[in-house]
Image 1: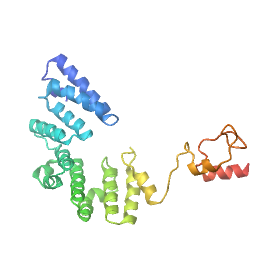
Image 2: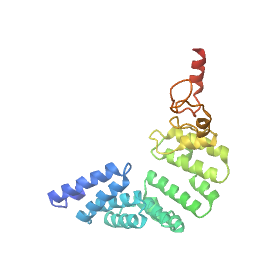
Image 3: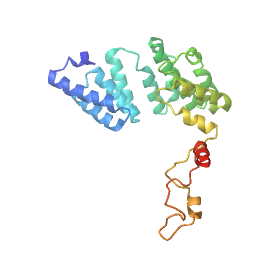
Image 4: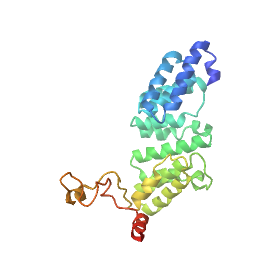
Length: 252
């Protein structure tokens, strides 16, 4: 990116670089702000491939798929790289054209992708299958050497998660639970909600300890000041106590 910006006058290059840095910093935590910085960079240097790519990522993050696809296509024309191919295909899904995304999965560009890119393309293709109501085909699409591997790669958690979700969609709940567990095992960065999905399958419910259960609150005897009889008002009275805490209280 620095090399590409060297084609600009120094002051302009610095301004563009600052905006691109903000896009990268904010893309995950505040995509709307990231999109705003990307628009500034595009106004300043729309002929720089890195700027068009950043604009595509920012638009993609806020669901502006027509705009994202336009920017990704522009960046690809400028660089000749195929690495944006899976994102372009996913934009087609976002535009309600899963058939187009699936067709892109069979294009020669996919063979030019590195291993990570090919996994991404497989994820997009499986999503397109599900969009088209082909849930069983989505399961088959995700079955691959990367899925079977025990090695943990940057894409492993997401691939396992997608496979678990696809299995659940076709009613294979037991297998889905196993794969959600495998996804959680690989998800050290917390990129998926595999733990929540596991809890849901196991019938575990979480109660907010700061919010009292309405029914219990209504049934509790209260004094004239609204304080529960026999002591001070307690937050979280409707939540069940942890079993260990209950045992400790009895011991005391």
